[in-house]
Amino acid sequence: MSRMKTIFVGALLICIALVSYSSRKRKGTIALDNIEKKRIEGVLNFDNVIGWFKTLHLDQETDTPFIANPKDRDCLKEKMGVTLNIQLSSEKNYLLLGVYNSKDNIITHSLLIEADLFDGKTTEVLGNEAFVVLK
Image (cartoon, rainbow, N blue to C red; front, side):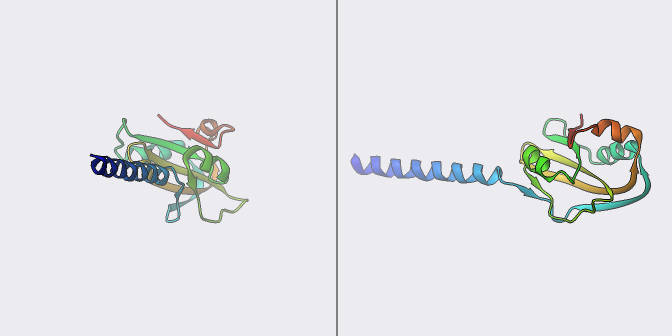
């Protein structure tokens, strides 16, 4: 009986270790190294931002669309666990569009837009926030 108990305890410890490792792995940062980039000559229109999200056919249960100021790297890391590993010019305007999948705990879609200007609606939606969830 004690040998069976030892095997059971050993198996239980292995299961706990695997669950702990996999949950730690999922909570790590998501590096957006190979992010798609788009340059817009002129004004970025918020309708185009919404249009990009609509082309993705998102699942309302698991997908969360967001926009963010990619220059605020601390906010990206804190809110989404995202690190953006590319250089951004301090003189240019950028907007990060993304979709977070809560089921798989990953960013499934992302687009970094560089534009000369943002239209009034984009500026209004972002406000003073570095990260905004869209619904």
